[in-house]
Image 1 (cartoon, rainbow, N blue to C red):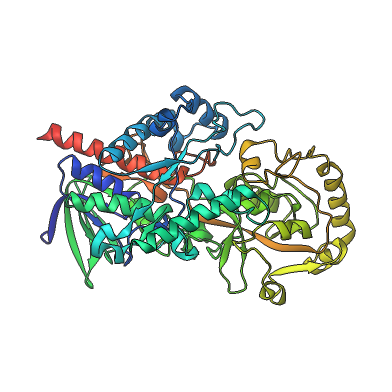
Image 2: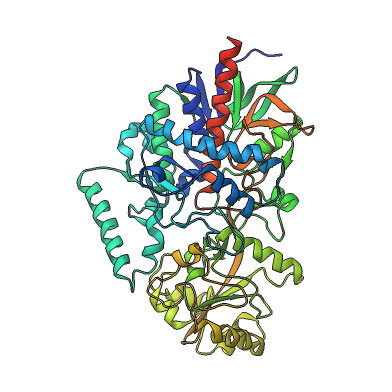
Amino acid sequence: MPDWEYATDVVVVGSGGGLCGAVTAAVHGLETLVIEKEPLIGGSTAMSGGVLWLPNNPLMRAEGVPDSFDEAMAYFDSVVGEVRPASSKERRAAYINEGVNMIRFLQDLGMSFRRCEGYSDYYAEMRGVVGYSSRGRSIEPTVTDGNELGPWLAKLRPGIAASLGVVVFTGESAALQTIKRSPRAVTTAAKVAARTAAGKLKGESRLANGAALVAQALKIAIEHEVSIWTETPLVDLVVENGRVTGVVAKRCGRDIRIRANRAVLLSSGGFAQSAEMRQRYSMQPNSGAWTVASPGDTGEVIEAAIQYGAASDLMDDAWWIPASVMPDGRPAPHVGERSKPGSIIVDQTGDRYFNEALSYMEAGRQLYARNESTGGKAVPSWLIMDGRNRSRYLFSFQPNTPDEWISSGYMKRADTIEELARQCGIDPVRLSATVDRFNGSARQGVDPDFHRGEGAYERYMGDALHKPNPALGPVEKPPFHAVALYPGDVGTSGGLLSDEFARVLDTEQRPIAGLYATGNCTATVMGHAYPGAGASIAASFVFAYIGMKHAAQVASRSR
């Protein structure tokens, strides 16, 4: 067996939530190396909203927002439901309890967060659900000056703020969608503009959202002498006598063997960008064309661990977000648009089949469920909006309808519902009947079929100025518009099975010595649900923290 070219205590594969694990290991005295396959650091985490869903977190306590372990567990039981290995009672309890400890740990090291007030749990106030928080359990990083990273700033994957050209908090996005009609939205926009301008005047490279989260964690990792190698993909694991003792990685064009004396933490993405794995595991149709996950989400890390006996679960699921396909072929996720009055979603037969304002993951699951029950009549579905809706609210961050959207056929437009139906290939009579039924109750602000607008999240994402139901209004004012919706996603949510200590389990449910995992390469503790904004990123950070704390404890005992 060839010699090791490099040796360290901990090897972390992936630089999203894995940075939290790297920091944890380093602070506990373990020499740590992070290997990242992409040229840029942060993966899908840097590209995200950077929100963390953490029950009973210290920011809630500081602001007097009531919560408890028991309420959070009750909410898990209501929403996630079935207890299975990936979402066992032990993993749920570890996530809630250690999430509190993790935030305190990161705050003590200099990371800074703000509460997303009003960004409610996604199932808050819905029928049959208990233990929720209507004020919300989500937090996000404060604005960060990327210049503090020095030369590492050039290695940071750009986030949402970079593409928008403004420094906006994720918790502000719902308000900004009503900027054409809400004084509150105008005030929020003014704050965003002032924040952005102030950064430029000070010569700062201001970051928000996922980029800020990764930047803050990266800064601490650098301060604690964590080594970080980019453009270094994992090739294989090294297993000796049943224990993972290191990895093989490709660096500078050749394979090198890296010894991990204490632990290997897998924190890569999932397989959202692998057409072959999507065809093999995902609900269909899905080739990965509708995902907005990091280009590095190609699944080889999951397959490497499975080769050595690792168990997997939830491989058919993902963090779904209904998306349209823009004229340039780019998928565009739609979150708040579905919650605005004057809109409706129907399948290809013209029938409405779910509450359009549900959380994005739940909406994606509804698309697939309907597609299966109708023999392929719901992918794509159609998001239909009336003229009042299009004049009042942003769509894909645009205040108006670009001519290209209409000329390319991306967005259909017609003066009548019947003509719109014909453009969409829907039976005009059937669609007209669906809209008439919907409008009859929507004018009263009620939805007897699917209860749209009853949940706190649905109202939060709606239009507070629209009465009596912020998330519901008739589709009646021409011209009418329609866009095809597909089950897009921000990453897969199934993968390696791990326990409450983030140890990867084999097919006999036994821990594989020396191997830990977190993030989208694992089967999520959230099961088939998404309890609140930032549930995926939070779980990635929490179990990275748990795993490396456990590895440090094992190392201490062995010494």
